[in-house]
Length: 81
Image 1 (cartoon, rainbow, N blue to C red):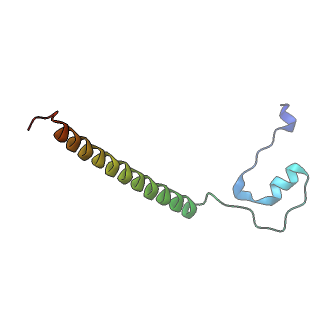
Image 2 (tube, helix red, strand yellow; image 1 turned 30 degrees about the vertical axis):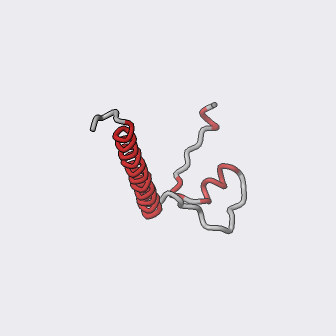
Image 3 (tube, rainbow, N blue to C red; image 1 turned 180 degrees about the vertical axis):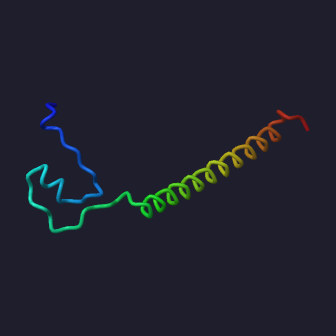
């Protein structure tokens, strides 16, 4: 890209410089700030809660599987009496 066409944009500056670069009108809606601190904290908390639930489910299934295998091996005599 030629140096004279290179532009820099800081999202903290909002719509005005971006629209000027793109030669577009400034929208009537607020500039989106989807990745602000509070939004990121909420996203991480939600992801952590889902991960904990998934590990609990995996742990529970593993425990059920081990108990089932133990009972089956006892019933079939694989572990002796």
